Amino acid sequence: MDHIQNVDAGDGIRLGLDTTIRLLGLLGDPQEKLQFIHIAGTNGKGSTASFISTALAYAGYKVGRYVSPAVFEEGEKIHWMQGEKVVYISEEEFADILSNVQAAIHIMQEGREILPTEFEIETAAAFLAFTAWKCDVVVLETGMGGRLDSTNVVKNVVCSVITPVAMDHMKFLGDTLEKIAMEKAGIIKEQVPVVVCQTEQVVKECLQRTCTQKNTAMTEVSLDQICIRETDSEGFLFDYGSWQGIRIALAGTFQVENACLALECIRQLKGRYDISPQQLRQGFEQTQWKGRFEKISCDPVVVVADGAHNPAAMYSFRQSVLSYYKKNKKIGIMGVFADKDYEKMAELAEGIFDKIYTITPPSRRGLSAEILAEVLDRRGVSAEPCASMKEALGRALEGGGREDTQESARAVFIFGSLSILKEAYQLLY
Image (cartoon, rainbow, N blue to C red):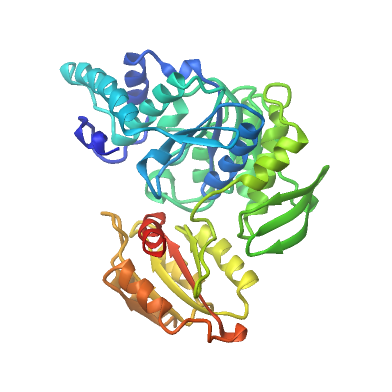
């Protein structure tokens, strides 16, 4: 899907809806023909969206998914699901859609209008694809923020979902939790049900105020109703209120809360998109979301990958490592973006790892491996920069084999920016 590089796009990140609205108008407003579940939040958007999408797919609905960023292949950004079937947009489909988008952009160029960014072009392409595929419902994640995110042009929303809000993208969204929460609350629509999972009081209050203004009810995940029956590094068996014995195959201590948020969304869909208890159980059990505390190799050493890309995600990652791998000798491979709070992330890596190998993510935003290693060293974490993922993985796996006793068995954790995971998967598979 490199064709997008050939389309005339505007520069970088630009928050605002006017250009997207204009582009979609020229394309016949495909989003008006679709129904949406709209998801904003700092962490957990992808997992929550996956639970909702897979449950709906197992109930027989054709579900569109728009995911950003792609981790493993470009086609995953725009895809549909039904039953067990998952179909990524093909190169040919994407090229055809982009030729229509380019024609619309040409009209904008002639009128000397502001041109859409790559994300705005992708969003328009996604809406065109979902319309062509005749999706029953689209599970739509915001790219950044909410209020001014280009996905927020959608009007036919059946449920708004807000995952935990934390400090991230401060340059664009604001430097306090309340300001960031206000941006996320921007997806809340008049009289459209809202479900949230928040622990920060300031965030709850902000979301509740917006719901009151929009004449809609806010449903919170009741954390005290969660009862975890079984847990291991392969997933969970849990009860949540009247839902008993729900099994999920996503590890990570945060995934049960994401699953409960999805359950609250599914409750709101009742009467519009009905899912039987059996379809729901099956959908949740089959839900996959790559790169989220995922065990990607066990031979000869356990390797776990996690997109812990900001301090809040890093905190959840830390909890999971300490829960499941208490007895293991822990080696890290870490790469982060320079615009994240990497000092705080380094602080959260303290006291866990015997060694961390740092790498530079493959992006203009990537923080150099050398700087990250220095920051970790200052925190008392033994760190060493590497020139590539291949080098880091080779060094992390060195000396870890079957001869290790269970007490000292080595476990390798690859974490930080999602952009570093793709190469790790390629090398291990």
